[in-house]
Image 1 (cartoon, rainbow, N blue to C red):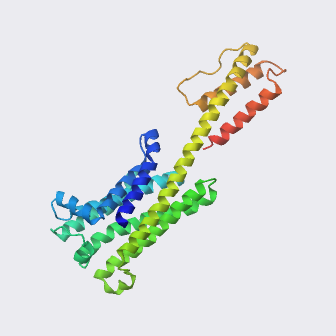
Image 2: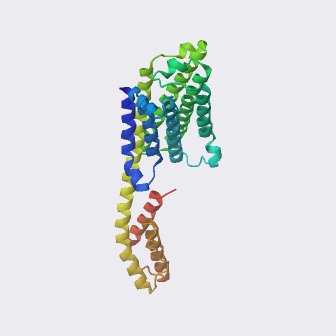
Image 3: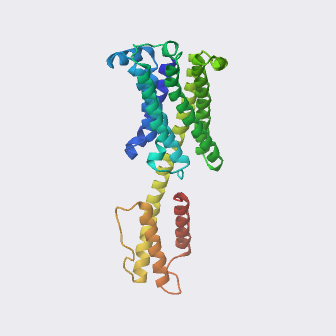
Length: 319
């Protein structure tokens, strides 16, 4: 039941990101939710058995499940770090080394384990061997590392955030911290099957782990949805203000150019963003005002309004 709840939570996150996907034609968080959701669905024994039977009945579904989760978490990492720490840039090949290493090791250990028959009790059947334990540990440890990195980066930048972005990314950070600690504990638990001294870290409670995973997914999902919805509303508000300001500034510009006896001073581009066109018009008005002579062709109200528009353009589109 918990497995299906996890898959449902990720499906809800994917659905919440659909407006972003439609608007931008791509969305990394949507891709991460779909990949992780498919992986979570495979944790259901019925779904797992059905898919593995289609793949030949040799537990390829287990490898697929692990890889989907790794890819999903990697996509989430990219989305969050690009949002909160866009300056953390390295060459694509260097950035991808942890992902390639995780996928390569998973495949290698799966092949070394040899042919196996479909089982929904992988831990009991195979994690007692070193190779079987290492296969599981690679994926779990990778998830723990990714979640931990996201949590650390978010906690660092949260103090500088404003509005709903602060609680939104706080939820993301807390959710990832819970996920990281849970996965680290699971890693120790898996290793304990092959290395008994770590048995104290093995909760032997799959439902307990899944409940924590569900909590982690819920916090991250709600946090990312809050920030996405807030960002969309902010863009809508800015776009509406720009249209209103454009409609107000345009007649001021036409009147200023007419009084100053000037033609258009800057080349117009109807395809340019409205904020750029608005800025160009204001520049032309100031140029016309300077060319008019010592006496300003603008009223005090017009001058104050233009200064207000300029200031808001700088604030709304800073950075």
